[in-house]
Length: 100
Image 1 (cartoon, one colour):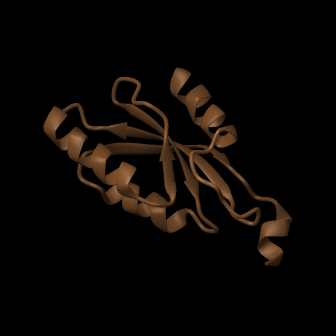
Image 2: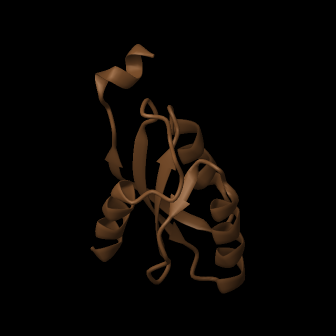
């Protein structure tokens, strides 16, 4: 799946500076096939300060969450109108981030 490759590449090429103790979570967000609803969800996702996104591939949006705990954002994405599915591609689980 090209979207998964895009999400992993995005992990290594971030658009925002981040503190070293911030965990990265890479996701594939599947947007609705309804263009208007999908466009609204896409815009909301791009506005979020903890999210970096690669270009859309069809209705798949590869994103990276830059946050100490991505669970809240994952739930927010799942509940967002226009989002059909959220798949985890990568989740950093290093022990150093837990020590902070």
